[in-house]
Picture 1 (cartoon, rainbow, N blue to C red):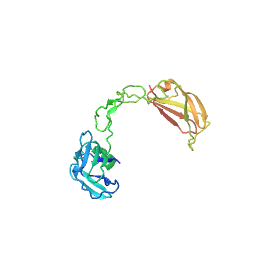
Picture 2: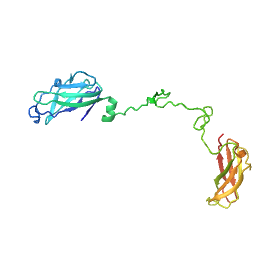
Picture 3: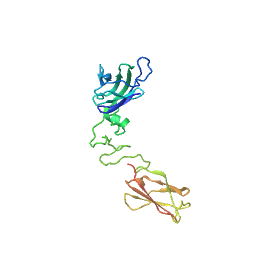
Picture 4: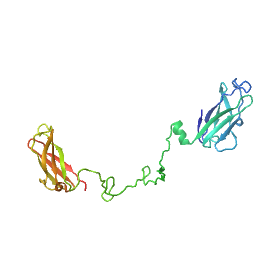
Length: 249
């Protein structure tokens, strides 16, 4: 089993063993004297074994010992092999990995978070943000769909109603003025106000009942030739209906 260690950190206890007799390969060796010089470390990139910095190993039970590694022992990131060979017992080897402090605290200690900062987008380095914690975004300026006009601050959204373009079969719901349920059999009159002007009939035509209180009409190009259009539909015994439309240029 891999032992995970925190880089350059003292007081990290590791289990060594079990140590068994070098003759029969079975009997637990419980009285070994294991000095720091008996505990060899192979750090990442090293070409030699180094003795544990200080302190040996202490027996726990059944031939298992513990040793305490310090900041010097764990100063190199990456794989760390721990090899112990003392007279009277077979050699013992353990594999450890030294992790960066924040990685160890995130995965093992639970006291930190992994750094997942974005450094590149599709191979290109991320620009330094103007405000810390917020990504720097380049906005495409224009008046097309999905673009932002930097002069007006508007975002163009694809809509079915366009300025100064006739629209046929515009649907709307009329409701009863008493119970406010969908009203059928009405004679509906439609007028419109363009950019705050008085309501007028304009060229609204072909008022037709569809079903279940839904009616429809045709709006002429002139009825939609403005930045803000308010449609008003009225009928005897029905609630007045006002609909605001902001046509797209």
